[in-house]
Length: 352
Image: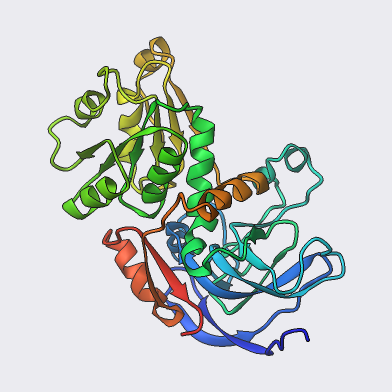
């Protein structure tokens, strides 16, 4: 028997730019021919969700809007064209909710760059609701051996940092510095880096984040607030003193983006992932040229990256540090995020 689907559900809705988010009852949507309806059990909370509330990115959101793009749940309905996924399968609603699948970018596995990409919790309603629509081609396939609560942050944070590490070109045995290492993305980046055979330097501030980095196997930790010279301290943390081979930037403010090109080693790569509102990249031209430094952006991941990142989790190589609260408590999470008081990740349980 197919599962019974209600006509109404609970959701956290942004009704105006700047918030707050409102816990209310809204209709349950029906999937189109190429879509699935996922009963969301848990959804991770990403810093991007706060940007969606504040409207401080140069990309307009739909209003009213249901945020969220780390939704893990079960397929309960599907359209006639969704032939490679079944009702009852575990599925994840990711940032890329759908794309055209026909443009040059989609055909080259760069579907995040598709000009018609649908963005969960930003341009279409996302996973901070009990039932969510997504294109069948783009929902993540989650093995049933996985715990939906703990895998939910992997659906954005995990995939994004894994893609960034791939883009860096760092090879096993080399060193990557992870800026914002104690946050949700940073804690996962450390684990993916270790699973890929890399050495890591955690860059963050506070004893709780130092301990978290240590727990996840960081080879060194630099506290940017207590350090007298971050550039020298990061370089000194590498075996030869030349600096890390790559820098993964998941910070939420501008200054770390300015420093990274100074301490990365010659021919090193700086990967920009975090998106501080209104921030700019700056690097010393002379030193960047003669040291042959590469600076590049990395934007989420494609469907293959997603499958690979989930496979690392399914094999027990990734442990997500998270706290779970009810969906109705989402505003409290945003308040903590705004104040910079979150270590690890928060997950919301849609049943409460």
